[in-house]
Length: 255
Ligand SMILES: [Zn+2]
Image 1 (spheres, rainbow, N blue to C red):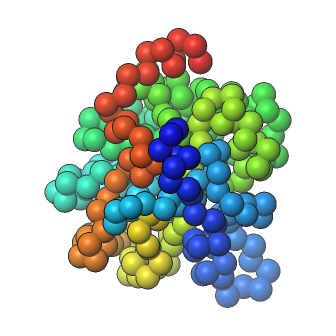
Image 2: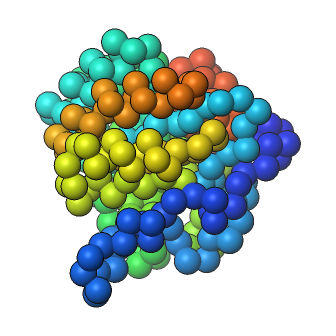
């Protein structure tokens, strides 16, 4: 936490939210957008980090997927790249071997809720059940609980973010780069959007449940590396120890 207070998080305005890629349909409200009330990042809400070195965090949401996630893991392993996977709890219990592989290969696993609902429409009791059930599943399969949370659709109010941080010490991790890959614009477009909009300290949103996103990754990863950027996990970009190196026993007992 001391690192986080020293390195101030960047304001969301520096990021590239859904508006940057506004759809052609006039009525289309982006399904995934940064919350309207997000003016400044704080300890409870992270969109990007002001880092001293040229690092970025690649994040993949909504897995594990039975075929796309393993293919992505192969690509990351070939390149020696660590990423962060925001897993859905009910998919973790469906594909435990893939979740275990993600952790064993040095990637970080974050909490992305149990059933991917719009949490901003739910009461605190239901929200915490979604989050705790997912934390427990990840802990049982990998031996450690997630230390960060990403709300489905980014739909989580400031009050909810502050409340979660206060009650579970989970910061809400949003993003500064959104390629809108879930719209399946094609792998070249996904790669171009990420390459055009990624800056040092950025957190890149993507989804490892779409073939086109995985197809975009060689070009994307090699392009960012070629620009001198190094990939780190979300914990690392926050200045925290590597997820795998942490001993959570005490946290779990008191949580
Ligand atoms: Zn999601």
